[in-house]
Image 1 (cartoon, rainbow, N blue to C red):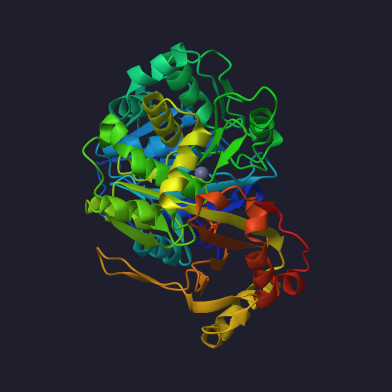
Image 2 (cartoon, rainbow, N blue to C red):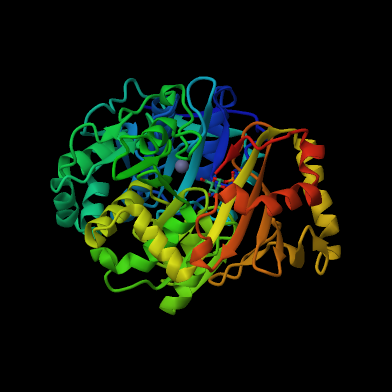
Length: 543
Ligand code: G1P
Ligand code: ZN
């Protein structure tokens, strides 16, 4: 086998976003596009000769082919070994788990998360470092800089690379281990949670549905829930990963997980419902005719964490992304532990975890996780809930209502305007930014503005500063509106508006969320000119 050096031209658009490089499949299909980015990753790293790389992805269109290209390039660039999931599959949290468990130098994950797949859908690639977490901005910036000047990449010739079974082979001197994508992850879950109590729960007739949305968590959920914990067959639906996710949008929320939501809000609703996204890092939790917001889920897991064996000694601290509701803040206060507020995106949690300052963390965008890996983890959250349900022996709704009665309720919703005109969206954000100084003290609707700023974060561990992370408008009675533009979309711009109102009085915990937030919704449109600047009457997705 010979190492080939291929001449290439830089692409101007290989800037990693909130979670790696995400583009339409057609963009990735341009000759050398994938190879340029992979070589730019390798060129931005030091000291990996002879070391181990983990490779795997969410199974979307192009996954297997891209995996083979990466193996050939890893061999040509001097890695000693690659651990790759069978068929090129690894969920994002499982990839993080494998990197950590096998002391790998890093990993490449092929995923565009919850974005649709198939030939007309999205593709994505990201680099994770040896701690198992997404590369910090320092590295992603270096990758982008390199991608702008790259002139050649290295790749070995290879006839056929068989990834359809677990085995070992060499590729130009580099060892390739094709591994079971589920085994290491399942073992870790069994260490963290009380599998006996959960198995007993299923034996006693408790019934749940897990919607894998035709994406990567199918094999993981089937093995863990049905094979190991004894949940009946059929517990996992849409459990076979498909290259186009069955034509669906594999995002576990009330809009896209429709099959599950219809069942859980229907006459024959089960005790518990859950779903995960394209690459397995997100989760949605449902009780019988009851939706648990991700922000409340994080708060409840924090309050009940010691019921799970892996967290029995208590939590070092917790963290949430800035737009996530402050529900967890009050639990942290009651527990006497630190609560950190970080910018959107998982990469900001890693430093806090590596420094031992937080154990649990989460985002309003259906992401929850802990220091067991360095990614958010969908199935982990589901198992955590099952562990708590098995120990508390109460329905989901009762658990949440009891929680609200003690800590108060944060009415919370996110309104997304997807695929809007980029110029209009940027004008809207610029307009808000310009008006920030004039807002404090002003009366908007019936509310008075207490503060207005553009969120910036100084990492308490390494001192790095991230600015421009979202416009916050806070009101004197604790309500809040946050505006930001998505960093993961691939078409036009996506405007996200996060609305939150705190209600301490249990007698007022029964309102409809959108009604409870109606005044804030009106203020948001007023102050930002959403309808005027986006030309949209309504959000595309409300979660
Ligand atoms: C979105 C979510 C964010 C999450 C990211 C990756 O990013 O809002 O919380 O970390 O996906 O799953 P955004 O599109 O808002 O930049
Ligand atoms: Zn995801």
